[in-house]
Length: 242
Image (cartoon, rainbow, N blue to C red; front, side, top):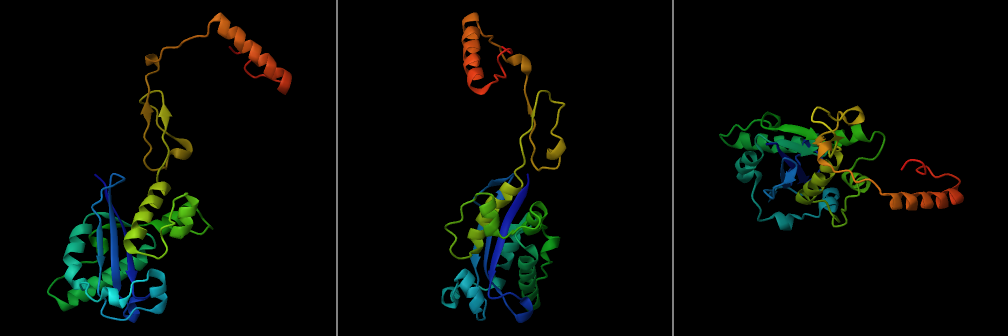
């Protein structure tokens, strides 16, 4: 069983060195490439002001956050939820940096000693993955939605849970792979498909199919039709191959 979690955060600003904090965490659970509905979503009281630039991005106001829990109050539940999973994050260093910063602050104020997230989970940066697949192109979440024909019309502002849901669709599109068709169980997809995730060879027993051959009337009609095509196009590829 492969447990993956699409994760995103919203913050009061861009840098932890300036004391900025997390105000929203959104996680979407995916097991064996299927969304389970066992998601995690939490708003957090940051105990500081929100930069105007950040507010313009996510629209989360201090008034809205006034009665929300502190990070220290949700740390245990959050870590329990993500522990052992693969975290898939678009621009992972940003979110992991903020989460580790919050965990560090929590450890300083309590007797807890929670470790850095990379010791609890594996981490996949979907932005690096996108840059590898689409070098020299824009690889923001919005750009990837457009490239993979994924609707994000409902995304007027950024939101951690909404962005995680959209990231799930983008990640599946980027890693969807192709289905290889083979006539024996010993054949496997190769060539350009060899490194594509989730290739599922299909075995078919050719003897299970009953071949029905055309009768004389059907052959005559076929030839008649090919002659008509030949008159129009100058060539009928299947005229003599009945």
